[in-house]
Length: 159
Image (cartoon, rainbow, N blue to C red; front, top):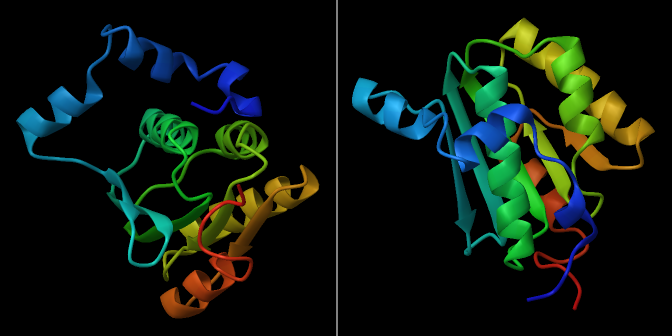
């Protein structure tokens, strides 16, 4: 397995608790029938697809970031579409700053905020933080345009 720069990064406390089995958000949400975020590799489009629905906590977003890092370590695509068109709540600016500034540099992220003003504003702030940190994040209103932007340099990471 290839070693990546971000393998040494520290995961959030919530992610550490989930990894150690102290906090099992997936089990809790599964029992309640609620899974606010899903992460999967869309091989057809060569991207990681993140769908976010309903009320999403910082811990949910941190756990999703952890899943992204795992996919990247397994040589998955370095392109992600974050679809928050059905998300109802947004992280705080401090949480957004922490997440955006800790993401792997090679990950290109297209953001789809939908019409919810608080989600759109949160994603705009995240985009600004990411760009100021040298990351490639962009906000879109159209999914096809977002996927086209993600794949401008090819759908899979360079060998």
